[in-house]
Length: 280
Image (cartoon, rainbow, N blue to C red; front, side, top):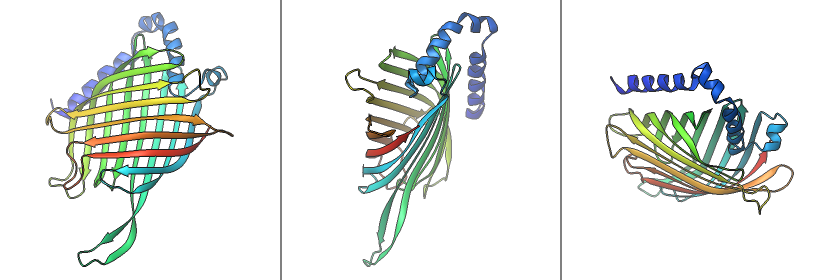
């Protein structure tokens, strides 16, 4: 069985588990509804939003990034996200875009016109509560001209659980399989795809002493089953501070690590991001 067939079989098994039997669903209905509310709060929907029947919440923002690694320049950035709670399902979608102006210098010292170098990433996360755990499906696509990454698509599916599930603190861990397709500019052999295992965690904390302020951190690790040195890791941590008129300030640090980058590129990229967002 090849990697694609293994992935398809794994997806089918988990989707079958999420459907379950009528008796199983009835036995866990009360717990499922309560945990769905917890999922909504962790996704950014407040208890008041849920009580009012608000299905969607999100924000749109812009700001700047200070970068290190494959570039030492500052970049402008844009972020948008939306979250929805529907029964036992939580849907999260996010889009990030950053760009900077660069000036190429030839061997004779001649400077060319400025060019825009950018990076973008879009993600969609689906999560469904089951008694004692949840099943998730993540889909992401990205391009990073700064790191000579033409594209990377990742589809993953697995199981997770809440290690902390309180009103002010939510902490989840999850693990599963992922299918990775990527291509670097100028890399011999062109594109490649591989089956990987994936582990991730996320912490959300809303302290009682700072109304409306929320802290967050998350990490993700992907490693190929076939090549042990072919792995990706990322982590971020930050704070979201409410301001006025639906606006908020988000400040976070981000680290992305690619153990097999494009030829001549750095393995680690770092960003400090500051953005002002409108919340809806």
